[in-house]
Image 1: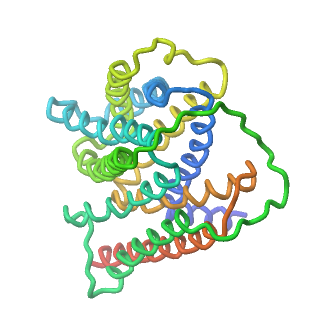
Image 2: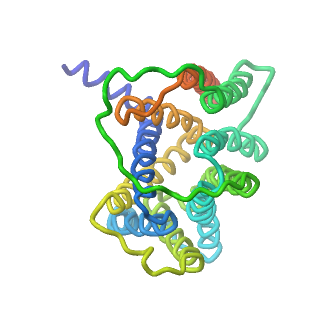
Amino acid sequence: MMVNACLLRVFFNRFKPHIFIIFTQFGYTFLYFFTDASFKHGMNPHVHITYRQIIAIIVLFPFAYFLERKSRPRITVALFLEIFVLSLLGVSLSLNTYFASLRYTSPTFISSMLNTIPGLTFIIAVILRMEVVDLKHPKGIAKVMGTLVSLGGVMIMTFYKGPIIRNIWHPFIHIQHRATNFHEDWLKGSLLTVSSCLSWAISYVMQAFTLKRYPAQLSLTMWMNLIGAAQAGVYTVLTQHKPGVWSVGFNIDLWAIIYAGIVCSGLIIYIQLWCTEEKGPVFVTMYNPLCTILVALLAYFVFGQKLYLGSIVGGGIVIIGLYLLLWGKQDEQKLQNKS
């Protein structure tokens, strides 16, 4: 028993960042179904963003205040402005443009575009010399090929359907929702989606720089939510003129806000900041395609939605690409440790 416990401890310590970042993808997977049900129930997406940030502030504040009271640096004007921009890119702008794009394009298009974030983050990190790509060494080739293969798998999942996989049982959960208005405008929707992806990618890279000047992950998460809530609130007030949009009943809307605030805006952002400091921004984003796979599987087995052969083939290719990228970065870290 002692040997097994020691082995488990060694395994956990070695793969802790991987375990934590995979947990974030499960968190985002359940968020997809919560918010999808809430928005189809009639919840305003921009109001949802504002409320979820407020919930995160309430939950995070006591932990950030007491646990990092002696370790967090003093906030200067320059640092506050930096966190303000980080909150704008990583919270309010990225989320609001993402949800706004849902009005003009299809969810399939948006999901495929969101999975370009790891590639965009990788490119930005290479430009800023945060990632080294040596194409003369197998590790460099593996990192590039892994990124391209994962992106190819995501594109297959998105654009190639193939035969439908028959449901082997009745769905466990049926979600009833109202009909929603959909206004197709691919140019506007594409610009909003690209803006959202770029905002997220830049924010992941910027987190690495901000953490060097403010190495207190809990406090930084709280600040990002506080400033993000203010930014999202101002945007919502300016764009949503009906007071009734702010009302929330004791229903799926409330549960979606609580879940998104505690898990996604609170715990997941904190985990991502910790992993960014440990492994870098590219590591944080390269597991993103797993969320697409998890959503497809959960939608099929639990909610009875259609599953196509293309999703299975594309999912397998994504996993191969992810393995190549992980191998390349692991080999890179071994060489750095030797040097």
